Image (cartoon, rainbow, N blue to C red; front, side, top):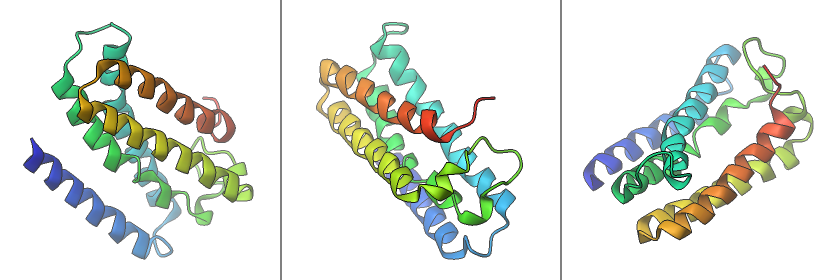
Length: 153
């Protein structure tokens, strides 16, 4: 599992570095696709942890630890895709406030990543109560950003 996680992490880091170096040259629609893909993957690995802490599925500490490890990397992915060139882009739910309140938006991003790191630590500890507590705080950090910076469907 550690080897698989390390390979995924290395691949994602290389992808993020590659995107950050050329994002000024990337088409806005490609940046939107990239950030949406990152958010989709966050949802894919965050959702099962939520189902477990809510008792909707059996708690599996190994799955929680694996998913949290992926989330630690994935939580860093979407942000290069919020380049100013994507302001007003089609096929996005991003509000224009992202580009006018960059400091506040970056603080919301940082808060989510901080909470995600706490979730990762709790998952590694194997303490189910700690996972439940940190999951809630992480979810609130995600929701706060979505409330302020994501348009409704």
